[in-house]
Image (cartoon, rainbow, N blue to C red):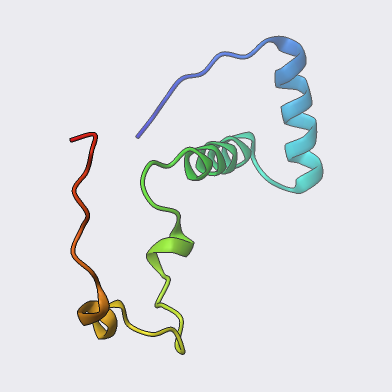
Length: 77
């Protein structure tokens, strides 16, 4: 996908210099910056949550379901 962006002269010059020092093209630096911004602003669950596999020694909720008591009447209902 192609985009055209416009930056002021000072920003463009600073970008060109930083890219040169890093040994990268301006486009590569811009792609990296956009990818980082998109990753930070991603919607949905964080990757850590998606990869969570539980706690090994934690008791299962279902194992204690028979210990639950009936809900009390809710005076606000």
